[in-house]
Length: 190
Image 1: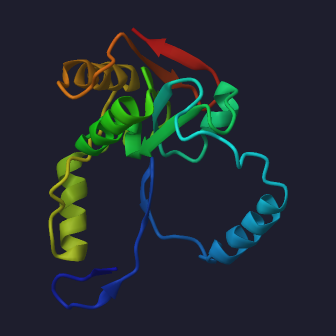
Image 2 (image 1 turned 90 degrees about the horizontal axis):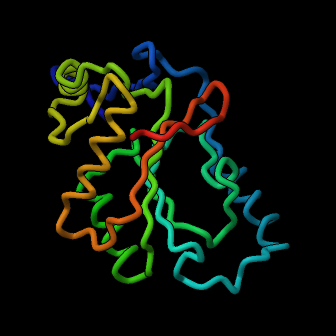
């Protein structure tokens, strides 16, 4: 929970949308519903015999955006790929860490990066955003937000980060795409 830096009073978190900060609508926790859904899922769980390593030797780094169902949009099944998600689908140190384990311990050899149109990080002024958080919470974020103007350039930059990393073992099959949230199509970033 964040606290007002001056008064010490707890502040209600905001929701970030591509048009700026807005106060959240009525919030109703959903964890109990999700756990109940899991109980139903487990009754007919078909995938108990899957191996630890992904069947397609594939790792996907994608934005956390809820409009992208990675398995459905790529026609993947459980056990096909490692899916690594964060805000923007950015190649951070933690993504590198995850990919190193994925490649060196679990046999993945192909990496696909997926960013998308109408992303919440598009055109965000990083310094202003960090200042807003510092004003609200009393501490300035130390991490890079990784905002961008062009999703294609962002994908290309992140592909270069992977290609230049000494820790990434398999670099021959790294490709990047931008998912169009209006029509559901992937467009390759070259």
